[in-house]
Length: 329
Image 1 (cartoon, rainbow, N blue to C red):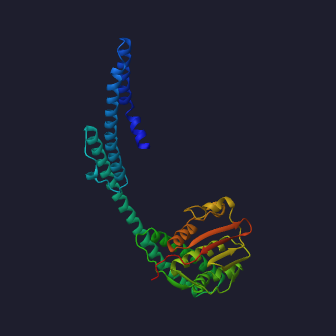
Image 2: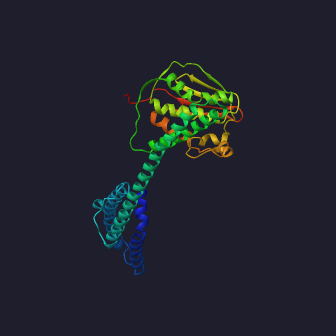
Image 3: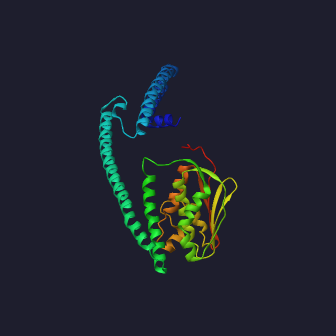
């Protein structure tokens, strides 16, 4: 109906001209005192014929519109799918569209090549930088001083940032390495918590965790990354108090802290890429990518993730681990 209204709007000049001609004949017949019926009858015939012509023309326009609409939704414009050329303007338009499509494809190919080169470079960089990190960690293991412990903690943060880079690159890759199967949730939690043991001890923060005795369908490596990021944020924004890890009903893993909390206006955007919020702006070093990656990974794994928080009272990140329609390998 909308297309027909647009069609009538475009052809209002022709329709108005025909109506004016009929009106001229009627007025002329009236001035000469001739029977008006003599012009009304042929006018009605002309009207019926005009309606027939309009319907046929509208059908042609509709068919062309649907064809062009289909073409506009294609990634690559296939010139062979254009409607049949019916005039000089059609030929000109198709020539322009073909040229634009060719330029677009060339620019897109060049952009994809540059993006692939950039991904390759950062992937190689991330893997290469792991070598000096591992070497420094080996040297630090030979010492047990306050300085060595502090350096080891900072080095762990560097490893986290490198892993975030690799995770970001993998998420945007066409291929994935997900291995979905049943895992012991306690084993994943303990493995992740162990990485932060030194920081818990150094900062004298309490960890409240008891075995949850649950099995979940997930990918161990990717879920470990999510829990690690959540714990890292909890430690970063909890100057004192405790962090607890519990499993609520329906397999909802909750990681709570007694930290500074998140402002209410920041909560709706907490999982956006690059969003740091009030806490991040105060920290200056926040990247706003950690929780974004968590959200992306949870979506890919079929898990839900949500956050609740109150300023100066703490934050709770909930990971919904209920079994989804995942392919177990």
